[in-house]
Length: 457
Image 1: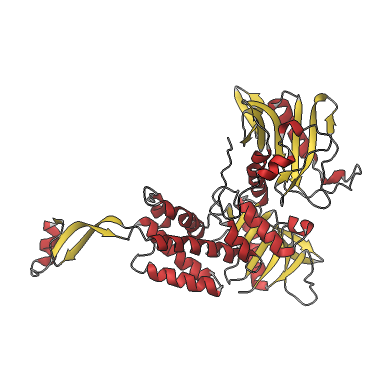
Image 2: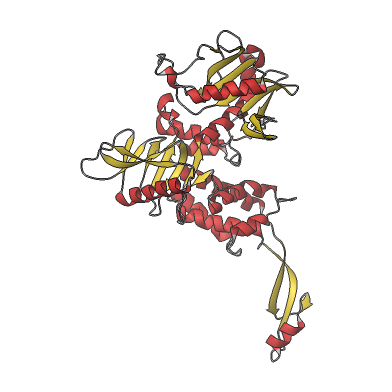
């Protein structure tokens, strides 16, 4: 399968003589570029999330991938793997960026079924789409080893022996001259249930997508096991009938993957009526979920972490609350707000200290945090902006003060994606909220592949 690997905000241009394929600008076939250009235009027209945007590079038309990562696959099978931009800044190349993304995706709602140990093992040599397909196949194989579940289903058929209830009118109409047949309605114990139909349909689609020989072999073997189960013709209807009751718990992971494969239910999918699997994830949401999961473990007792608070509004008008203030994270103590935190997926540079560069910070984020601090902390306390740690931003910036809000301080802190900890300011102003480093070491997450429960409220 032809394809390339790029990073967030890289530009794609159509292949032509004299067009260089260099860092930040990659060349794709003309047909693929035309399809990408069409997707960018459709997204702009529909006002949808701008996962692609039109731009220009060195005098050539180009499309630029924004802050979304994952897999783009054009209808002709050309695959574009988009990795987090932080992979360039922390070193390790594509393999390290791929492993990091898989680990971060486990914290995003709906993707906790990614098994990190097996995914990390193949991430160094396999594109993301193949990793996802491989994880789905392993989940289905787990079901097969425990046995497919069957259930009673109503069946109407013209059978040789009377079973269940005889439909007199239909029986007389069809069997007036055939005394060896009975048109009856009866319950049949069969593997033809919604869960199995969905898995069979997802297996067939995965087999059509994958280019990995090992994935193809396993997919064919599993399809053979499901040979007596029809494929789901209406996945949405079958998903509404799924029952993960007693004895069906081992189906959960595979069905989560099937929902992704059959419905293209990633946080964003390529627009258009094609069946190309473009599985893309907004890195802002991925980073926020990753920080939330691991920051909860870093907090000292008795502090707790609350996600997506929405208790206050910026203004009221005619008795209505307008413009909800929704910080990403809140640190609370007995329901009292103590810290307000907002995550930003942006690379800073602590060497850019001039008034024009401002470390790469966005003025709008400071307005936002000031409003959060006034509403959630009554203008007294600390608000935090959290960015990914890189070699260019590896320690907390000096505190920012609001001249008209003397009791409110703003901190800009790096979060280490590898160590999974928030790096605190050396002055110790925030130490009371977080556990000591020695405690963090003893609370390290269990070995890869084992799930970890985090208490978020």
